[in-house]
Length: 536
Image (cartoon, rainbow, N blue to C red; front, top):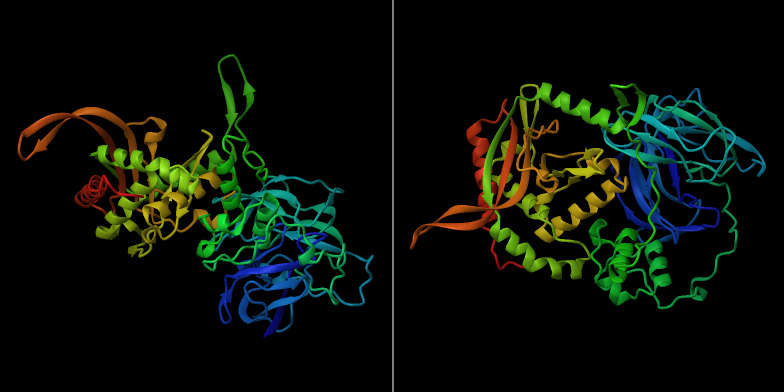
């Protein structure tokens, strides 16, 4: 066994300390290389800290809320290696277990340079490889710590790759479009010794510049670390709140989307944007635009267009699903007149209290979960000759990306949320999907999918199942039509009602038509049975 220490990482040249926000692992837990170990925060940024080695968490030395100097050991991991990991060379870093940086020796000269490999990161539990989409730096360019060095992609998500150290980009080992295994080196940095993280300095890092004492920090009003309800405020959130004059009482009224209701930076920015509407929104982190189809060759009769990467992935996934599952689609129609009344009576108050719009999506997710409880076979997957019935209701909600593609982030544990909670979850995922800010975990673990084709003007459709799921529900556009209403007193009447078509595609290998239609009927029963006087 070998013991690997986890230090408080350096988050910027002038940052001398960080705050432990929340531990994602506890002593005794198994942790994989690059799996999130904890969240930390400074007055500049909140971020996740990945595990520096695979093994078991042996010790936690800093508690949630503690402020710790950069370089201080905050945890220790026991690995299965006989000796502590050594710095990985480009040739030796072919596997994740071999690419752990070792502590910097005290005898190292401050001016000494060392080569720091940039490796393909692990983007999720089931992700084993990644593709280099674009390099943001070229050989010879200066690179700052955490500055975007490249954009990488998997079959789940595209994301930016931050630099693990400050220095000069010495070599690019993988070309754009190349796919390599997780842990494989893709570039080489020439860096001053001691700046790459998560190395532990031999001595405490000298503050540069000297930090201003907290008591002397200018503040329009005091913002403490915890709200009255016990929720922790990260240093970044406190810093923004101080600068914007947001007091503790106002912060207490913000609904947090973070773990245990914690207010994130985006929650605070959204709150301030809602207060100042219709002024321009707060600036957001710029994400590189996805490539759009480019005409490669043109003649008098034909334009040849290359598919972009998103289109290629969609094509691959959809054809795979068609080959895998025996698709059957059943249709039904639903009276949503009462649902429209519920939304109209709640939307103004809901937006005022929550800062987001109330859409139909959370009602449909809620109804889908209730139907899945009664017909759990639609919340399953097929593995060979086995049927795996999932006990968690993780509902994917399809989001259109600027008419160029589709992405399906997942509302985890949807059955634990109220309709209001589902509204927040759906809004957050859709917003981050359109700003290219989703994390790999946001796209994994779905057990059932909902797609609102009606928002695009379609009456009905035949959606393709998202593997390895076995069912997907499409909601069509809402139209007013004269329909027959059965009245127990007056008999049959004709009235103007708001109607919607539903399309349920399911895997006929395990789901028969009778069960598919029964699921649709239960879904309709839940939606049409909502109390018109309900408060969301």
